[in-house]
Image (cartoon, rainbow, N blue to C red):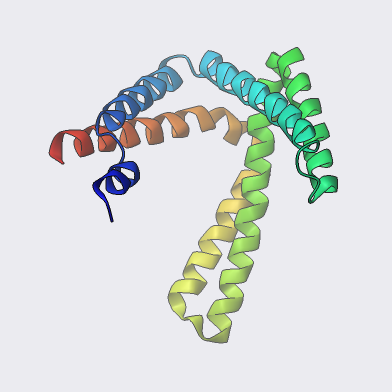
Length: 173
């Protein structure tokens, strides 16, 4: 392996510093102004979906493989992006709430799979994790709006911890 390939895989170290600082700032913003920061993140997601939808449609002119999926993803991306950009206040509530509902359903499904594994020889650990995952899913689905209100704080905590980890990685390595 040449030195150039090793540097490409490794990446410049200063990116860890920028990533760490950006994550800490994002985490602090999510803690101090959760509604405004969540609205900004949701609008950025809407812009991303809009651009991604347009790119999927344009990409059809260059590559026709799986054209049906590209067309569907393009149309859905454009519609979702436009709706979010046109209705940022509603989207600030609907997008996180939808995410919570998806996480709740996912938690229940993963819990059922883990329980099946536990009963087919996976052991007690899989069973306990399955039960906890099902309980977690039910809690999220019981009141998704309340859970969505807490989502910025959870994301803020993760952002700060990840930012600190990136800074530690920058200064230690």
